[in-house]
Length: 402
Image (cartoon, rainbow, N blue to C red; front, side, top):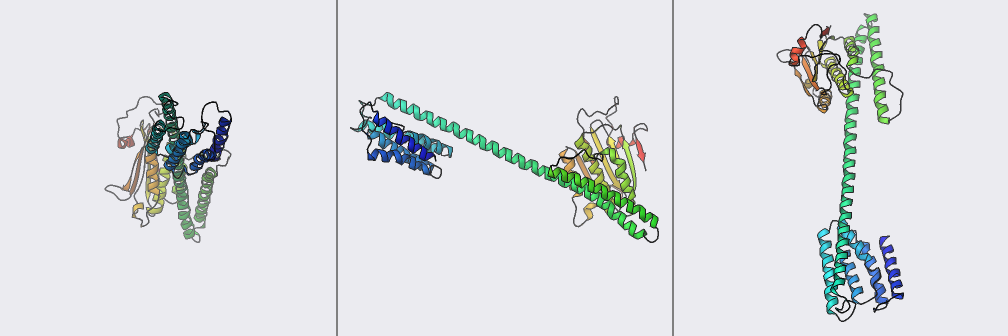
């Protein structure tokens, strides 16, 4: 399209200039029209062969001017070719071709007995004006190139940022689905085994196990529906169940106890409001820790859940006295890597492995709290205590449940 427009402007503009010619020059002939068309035709190759197209445009333009024809918009092809070559990244070649074309035009014109470039008809000031004009065109083309590169870089940055956010969102949803499904399905699996075992001998206890299965499956469906709603980006009413957080710790422990695990909880420090991201991560870490106990620790185990509120950090710990550990499974799992990803994303630290000097397994995570996350409603506290010291606590700030 551009070559067609350029060719039309050059032919029509030069024809009009020829009809209104007010200085001594050659009228347009067949060769002149051929040269006016040859430049736009060469522009057809400006994307594949930008330097070659620029060289051809300069050659035909120089020939047209040196033959002494009337000067119309013949330089338009030259402008388009220069911009195309520099925009294609062939900057040095474009400058060299332009300089060569300018030198040939002025040098040959000064030595030949025809055309407007005779020294008596084309003074040095005209050559200087043309040089300045070419420099302006080259500079403008460089500015266009820089702007185009910046726009392309901005598009690439936005695309990479969108891909990164999409990847992070997929990872977050995968963690949520894993934590929700693994915990509740583990509860359902354990309770189903209990119900099958007691169905004939103790039907009342089997009924209790079936009720626990119903409750766990209901909660799993609710949370999965919530995650799928986020995926579909569907506007929904406010959730009917409380948001997952440490405020639901008692419900989490109750479900683990319903699976036949003896769970002790210990909360030290004065509880204070947590940021939503930290509150959800803390709940999921404890949930996954209890899920691992249910699945791997074996029957009749005792698990201890510790939550320590500090002025600068939140300590979470789940340990058991069982015989198994997630790392002992041949296929591994996503639970501990998922917990570690949550903790790392919040700038915290986490360890998971066998308890030192004892049987069982322990998961321990430390989440840093914001500087302004000082416990609400408390005065000065001794923050020099270590997390282990905080576990000892004082009766006023500690609570422990079996």
